[in-house]
Image (cartoon, rainbow, N blue to C red; front, top):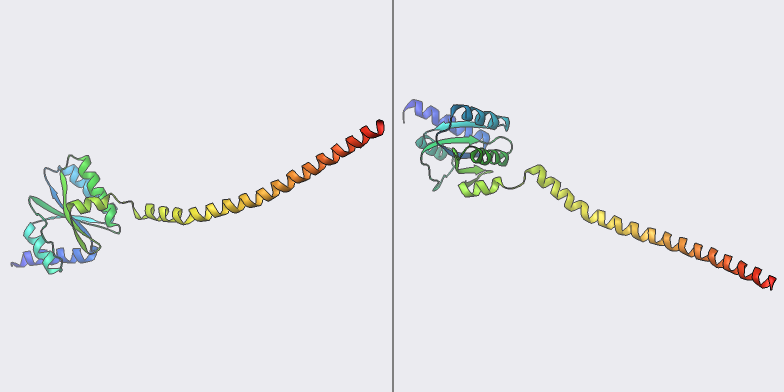
Length: 187
């Protein structure tokens, strides 16, 4: 391997190790303005986009100890390195593809140390984000406590209502007795 290609391969290996997660994309007739917009959005997620030759990608993955398996690398290939949230990057990639007439297509990816094909990456991108899952989990924990609290509240208020009804009945009986006594005195 020539020195320049070796340097390029080493750079890709360093990026793979630095980011850990990446999505392999295929692009076709992507206009320059859209490509710049795409790069800016990926950078906003903390990631990076790099276009490369398939052979460099395969050799870099091999050097990094990543088995790409049977991922079909046809056409123009690029790597989208994921920032902090790999799923957010994959979600944006799917959305960008849908919004731009499939000019970008997911080939596969590596998320949290696991290699996925295109269908799996797309399926993972449909999952809720970490914050949404945290909110759902908190709601799940909160529901039984809220239901228990409402049952306890109902029990306590029912006792108070019973006492109130009893006192009203006792006052009503007292008034009825005094009315009866006054009527008896008059007769």
